[in-house]
Image 1: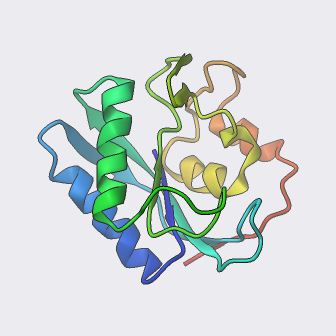
Image 2: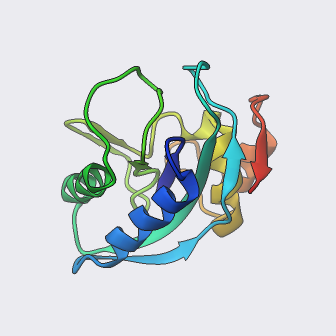
Length: 156
């Protein structure tokens, strides 16, 4: 799972989101990457993000897990709308769901742009460098090494 924030206390927003997810009866945070300050992508007129990745175990299927993530985002103050890739209190994304490659209403796994985003691959590589992308058949480490994204990612 990828997470990020660039409104308010972004680091605290990320930690609160992980804590709220960890309090769930059906999901457990198993590993968390270091946090990184990352340059915005797409919508440039906004502050930098704090981003990271977490490995989460869950008893839920992909669609129900997405609904749980959306509930955690709402609890952090996120509301629907606003510019695409714009500022937000908390963003939680399913990057991989085991080795599943599938599409559901409002969800594609693996995340369709994760292999193009340094702000995802750097923290993901910190916790799962050997994880294999089930469609591209490359490890996270290989995806990062071949990336042509020039966006800056710096440790917090």
